Image 1: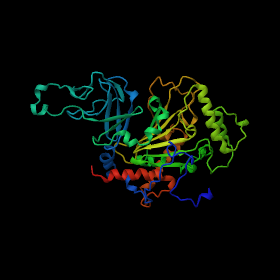
Image 2: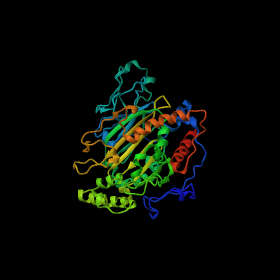
Image 3: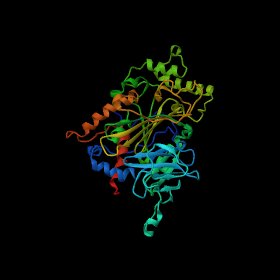
Length: 455
């Protein structure tokens, strides 16, 4: 890497320098978000948290559910972001609709369960007011005891915008927000070969971590820390030569090579690369190529294996068969997408404590019955996990101190708690970023645009 020292620091690498400009893997033009430090107070100040509530979370598209969560009219799930709770339900006309989980009478929560089915609508347990699946008031208890001027008020449920993409249901509290697909930008086209709509959540693990949600976003938006915190993955992960692409609306992408050792390692076909070859049916004892040849060999083997098993990989570029195409959807979703499935990370603010956040690790796959079609090891599913998709995944709630998120995430959890304490030190003057951390700067630049507007 010493030969790279004269390189323009603003530039990152292309995974495929020969990719046509029209290709999904083409590198996006450089976006200069400056080199100034990131202010520390945004990570712990209560007033920042409150401003985010009105100026950020109330204005952005928040992922709330999957369409398959509410297959029939009356089926519902609840979704929480900060102090707000929402009901996501399918109405009688087949539309998916979203309402604040609050009765307009006295403010009681309508439902407490995570999910269920109420085909007759929602009844408030406080005074038995009933609301239809369209949000309209169906039954008012003792209507004769209300003045006419009270009854003429809008007594329907407060509805929020609800739009879907590839089976993901998003909500937005801002009636004037741009359409969801506009904010997703190139991801809409890039994701088409993966058939995300046909995938199912097969595992969801949730923990409350001891840091601000932005510490989590920052940490997973760069590979610069991997050599120090996760050295065990360097034998199969090129952490240094990452392609970073910055897009409008705070979206970004990082493409990193798997089945390729980090340049921080010896240039050899190591034990981890041998295991990767075994995973796709290559006998490493008969492989006589250099380390650089492992990745294309794995790509070819995966394509041949897919053909044998009846899987359609025709829509994928070779590099998509091995590499992590990691998209960040502003402000709080990361999607590492692969032909086999998606590793999705979700960062949500705590309801009252700016020094804590809710972290979900979600694994989505195409359901499979054939035991030969196993997900790659990087998906992090325990051995023997049911990947048929017949039963909905039950969220596993864990204490991060006990582990259980997987080796890499367990390493990050304790680190983030230390970062939170350090950020609040009087000796910390704000984050200074390398160009390997461009995605962090891009995220905070978009965040600053939201925070600059008055609620």
